[in-house]
Image (cartoon, rainbow, N blue to C red; front, side, top):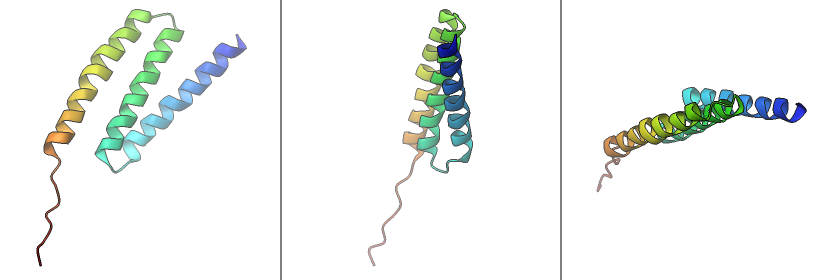
Length: 86
């Protein structure tokens, strides 16, 4: 029981830390990576609640789908700074 409480507290801190990082980080790429960390730690919470199907759907739909779409959007819309030849 003590190990479960320690694991819950650890992943709760990871979830809160990554969620704050998503909001506070200026770089959109790092924000997307922190969002992936937050979503994965929520999936760990589902596993700890013995809801393995919800954990699998969390990983497949949110981490696998939404995060990949955000990553592609960032990569396709990022512009290179123009270098002046002067």
